[in-house]
Image 1 (cartoon, rainbow over the protein chains, first blue to last red):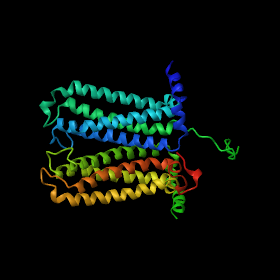
Image 2 (cartoon, rainbow over the protein chains, first blue to last red):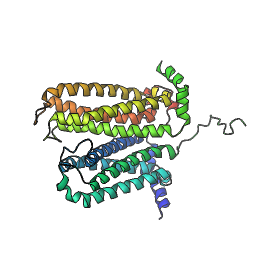
Image 3 (cartoon, rainbow over the protein chains, first blue to last red):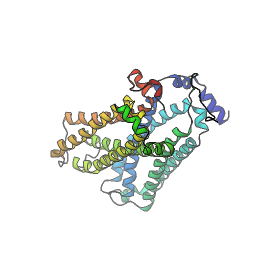
Image 4 (cartoon, each protein chain N blue to C red):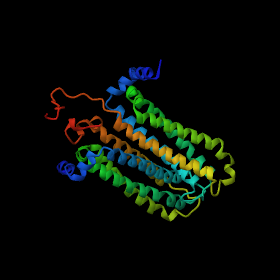
Length: 180
Length: 176
């Protein structure tokens, strides 16, 4: 089965249909998604600003990172679960949406940046744990802030570009020729 | 009364300008959401320090002084972007019960933060401060309050679905 076929299959599942028909499910799922995304971004921002050395480098990076990373992953898990549910509701539309694809691409970039930092840049963390960070760490921090800001901005654009799935009431006469 | 005012506001040149430039609303909403992240995590960090979960090697004052400017700055930017978003769609906002509940909770949140900072200041410079159960409860309640504010912000778009007949405008006027 190709990707459009998978999107159609997901769209046709009972879960997708139930979510579309439920009045309360969508606002609750969307709200949890926003809470989770805000927490992911905010906790990552705190760590990134420490990497950038702004406004200060007073705190131990490893301690700060250790304190926050659990919150980031917990919120990220909530964002993924709610994000999957939002995708399931309208899989075919999301699959064809450019902003959605750009968001997924940005998330991959964020993952690659994090992986490179953990495996390469962060290996000599002890050397700069309680002081100014090296250039590679500052670059990783700047990239991370930029990528996660992109994720949030692109995510909001999805809502304005995916179109709306609503039916026009029978008694409404839409003048699509604008009187001509 | 508010709905009448909202209808007048919706006809002003500024409102019409925002409505006719389709990039303005998503851009402002994006900035608004970024600021939610900044404010919520600033509140979370201060709360976790009160609960003894982060920054225990620092004084409460150090944590408060680090994060409270972000909290206040973020609230300021959210107020500005929220104001312009309200001018763009005043009837939608004014007819949503979620909007008025959100505004009420924001006022409580701001007053609570002001009171919280002042109340804890006498203890702020003690390195290993152990906060009372009451202070911890208020701190945890503050996080719940901001989660409710985020929920209500998203619920404005679903006001009829969430509140049913409690929605303040005509039921068919609720748009996503």
